[in-house]
Length: 335
Image 1 (cartoon, rainbow, N blue to C red):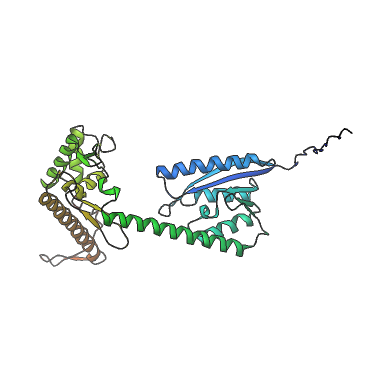
Image 2 (cartoon, one colour):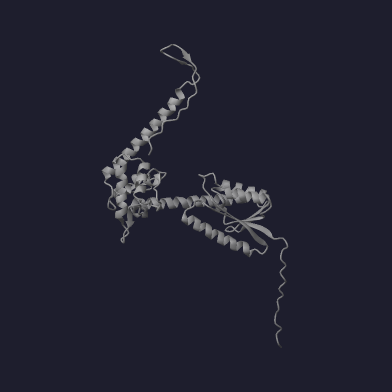
């Protein structure tokens, strides 16, 4: 007897008449190349996620390059929140809880603000939809765990950097700067043309030129900055004058919170003798001290003048009303 083939009925798909307006929120901690590359990858992944949802439509993408040091911190999040309050956004897609703020407190506050505006938040990595019914205590636990893992990972990275610095294997020891290139063997070698500019900068500073004077001299000689600009910046000149690498030594992890620094001596050919480098550092300190003294004297002069008292002439013994005068603070020595 012939077996009757099994047939499975597939019901017709009925599209949800309500299409939810979705937004993507992406946050990175800096504008460095690797962070911007991460931002691009996040946007691509979340865009695919939105278009796989049959009743979602992408309305906007909010890209946050977050920095607590600037006034623009959370500008894009605030724009997102405003749009949610206007009911222009109904669902927000975020890569993970850890990408939503600097710490667990900020993460919870951000979620609370959006949920109160009536939206749902979808976290891709955790695969959870967060709305007004989602228990906040669970979010707090998840966020705290993420923060602890991030801190542990960060500490491991710092420990690895310290270990490589102590053992002399850090790549920072052989990182080229203006005046050097990396040779075929991986060691630093002089770039003779740039090295001559470094020597000239040190000479001009010891001859009494200010930063601005050095910048003008380099511009007149059409010597481009390390970044290829026509004019050097004050920061670029300062970086050259304070970089110990020009002495043939390398110092790494100078900004370590432990205060420890690691120095590897005679790793490459010197451009500036140590005695000349030390003389420049002493000169930088002396100029900075004079500048502070000038500013202090100027401030004291202004504060100690009694502008509301009359002037008594010692020659005629006559009293004169003090007239308003204009006075500008002495210009400190330019660096």
